[in-house]
Length: 334
Image (cartoon, rainbow, N blue to C red; front, side, top):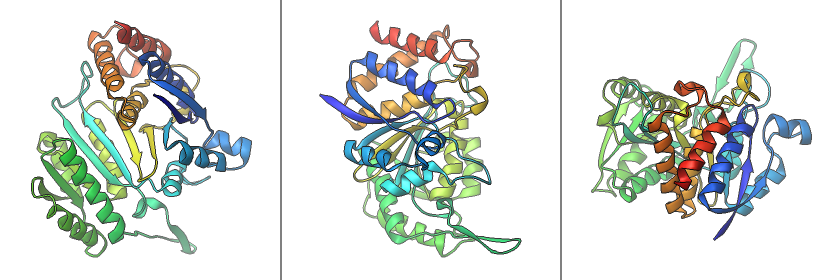
C-alpha cells in the first residue's frame, strides 16, 4: 500500500534529522509519497504565516504528518507553532512512550512507561494578557469535555496495549476547581475500566517518585502543562530528549514529531541525533498499520546502538547524522 504523508522538516536541525529519517523509512521498503510543507520560521519568511493554510490543508487531506523540530522564540516573537498546530487540528492527545534503548546509558534501566498528556487547554494553551503595567494574567482552562476525552484515551490505550495501571497526576490540593474537575473526570472514566488499576499523585510528589523509582509507574495521565514538564523529566530517565519519540493524535489526523528543540547552535553541522524523530516515525508506521516495518526498524536501531561503533556525539561517538542513518539502513538490509 502506498501512503501519502505530509512532511514538515522544520528549522534548525530539523531538515537534517528529517532527511536521515526519510532515508531510513525508504530503506524499510514502506511505500510513502512525501508532501513537503513549511512551518515556523521558514514559513514566516516565505509566506508571512507560521502555520500556512497549505500546511493545514495538507495534513487534513493526508491525515498523517511527520514533523521535525520548529523553533519557538522565548518571551518574544510569534506564538508556539506546536501549540497552534495542536489547536488548529484538535490534536487532543500527546502520547510519549518512554523506555530504555539498548546501548544507551541512563540513570535507570527497565523503564517502560507511557505519558498521556491533554494537548489543547490548561495554562499551556497560552491564553494570557496584560491587565495593567507590571501585571500579567494567564488563564488556566480545564473543561469536562477535554478532561474526559483524554482520560478515555489513556485508559483505552492502557487496555489495548496490555498496560496494568493509569496514574492521574494533578495539583487538586491547591487548584481544587480546575484540577479537581480533571480528577473528577479521571475517576469517572476509571470506573468504566475495572480491569485497569487507577491511582492519583500530586504532581510534585509524582516527580519525586519518578526519579526515585520509575518502575512503579505505567501510564501517566496529565493535564497539558504538567504533561509537558513530566514527559521531559521521564525522557531524562532513559537518556534524554534525543532518544524518545512522540505522537499528537486527534480523531481525524495525527502528527508525529521529535520532542527535542531545533538546536540552532548546531544546525547545518550534521551533528544531531535523528533517533527521536525516527522513534516518532516508528509510532507513525504503527499508526498506518505498517507494523512489520516498524518492528524491523526498531531491531535495526537496537543493533546499531548495541554495537556502539556508529554513534552521534550526544551518545559519545563521532558519527554524523547521515552516517548514523546509513548504519541503520545497513542493519535493515542484513
